[in-house]
Amino acid sequence: MPTRSPLSRLSSGFSKGVENDGLMADINTTPLVDIMLVLLIIFIVTAPLISQGLNLNLPKAEAPVVKPAVDPVVLEIDAQGDVFFKTKPVSEQELDQLLAGFKEADDQTVIQIRADKQTTYEAIVRVMSKATKNGLTKLALITDPPAPSGKP
Image (cartoon, rainbow, N blue to C red; front, side):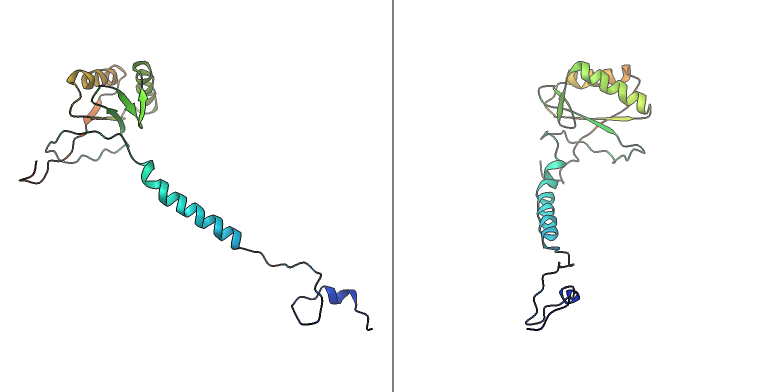
């Protein structure tokens, strides 16, 4: 029986009749591709859910769209008068702290109020008053554009 040299074990390839006890130097990318596809599907499914806000019935008004120079802070008020920031409820004390923090960060911060059309005037004025007491005077109300003529 012929003897094999130790170097013959290191040779690469899959030729017939030769045992290959050496390690493969190839990287298996299949698990990486599988994980990336799963992550892609997860992001596709969850992306629409991330940008949703509260379901409010906004009043209709005709006004030009105003693009602020700085990203505005949007406060939402539901029909019961509860205030929300980024869809999280905010108490009166938390609202004061939040507005004071925005004033410290940038005194030119624009506060946009997005209120349900069933919200009382008192709830809207209360939020506007807190903003001005904290030194934030750039306030705006968000409305929906009117429906095309002939539709309610």
